[in-house]
Amino acid sequence: MDTRMLVAKVLIIVGSIAMLPGAIDPLEGAIIAVSGSAMVSLGVYLSQPQKRKLVYAGFMVLAIYFATIMTTSALGGWGPNAPAPVLRSNWWNLCFLLFLMGWYLCGVGVLFALAQSFKGPWKWASTATWGLAMLAALALHCYLAGIVLGVSRTPIETKRVKGALEAEKMTVLGKTGGDAQEQWMKSFGTEWSGDAQLWWTNAKRGDRLDLGFDVQQQGTYKLTAQFTKAADYGIAQLYLDGEKVAGPIDFFNDGVIVSGVLDLGSHELDVGQHKLTVEIVGANPRAVPEHMVGIDYFKLELVGK
Image (cartoon, rainbow, N blue to C red; front, side, top):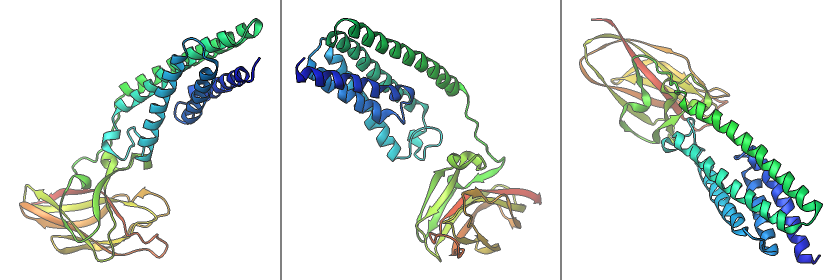
């Protein structure tokens, strides 16, 4: 046996073994599967068996899949908890079809490569072992596909507080600094109404954020709200139509939690647009001084006419 064929056989065997963890976990094992398919591709290039193009095609598809999951991971990943709305669609799960296509193309190519690279008992032992591994992988993938399809058919329930003014949907009338944007919160828990909040970042002490809302009926309204607390959140003062509402609220906490429902008093409101203002007035001494603010919702309850 010449050195070229020996190296080819080693690459094919080691590469095919490396592909197996990817079959078990297409996400965490993706880099191992791609590396394994690359080794197999180099092995069949050296040994030149028939059907080697199957291995090449499988490697290319796996490489595309790996590039896709790395790109989406850099953007926060896909799924219901993804920070970017475009990545929350279940259609992203079709990326797993790329993995399956690449893995099985490469796997069938390995069968041909083993059959042509070995002779006698080694030929039958190697092809039978790899064939059984592929059948086991197929059974696992069919089982997982059933789970995924079952989950995708299950409606994802989103908790919403009845009558709440979802802060991330409110009109931003103006701000003196920072960026206000919607943040998906389901990765932190299920306590946020609508699974999201209005996230005010990059602001500093003294900056103000104005939010608008409409009142359809004149009367006395009880104002409540829920916010987010975290290690890098600041202390804020609230205003309703320019008048202070309660005292400053400290949003510091070691972990990311909801504040719980806060009673902000009762207020006489006329029909028309009104303004809620959030002013950053400082930060807890233990907080990371980023002065962030997270607003889940405000709620108005008519208590008198």
